[in-house]
Amino acid sequence: MTLTNVSKRSMQLRFLPQPADGPFGHGHSTCSAGLAPHESCWVTVWFRPTHWGPATGRLVYALDGSSSNAFQIRLIGEAHQPPL
Image (cartoon, rainbow, N blue to C red; front, side):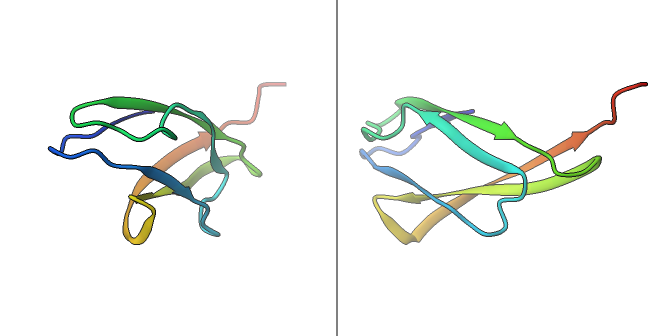
């Protein structure tokens, strides 16, 4: 997943683990150093379903280290049973 700072100021991003993340999580990220204006970084997002069918979750990030200044990314995935 690519995140882009579309503002005119630099900012820091911090992942905030949530109990409602579902079967999703994030792995390696290039976003830890902060983002200058119009700069992008990327995050590896994984999906580890615990049952067949659709699943939803979210990843929540804080801007500049403040949970009151957070945004969430909604995720949707679907696990299919392999054919026998």
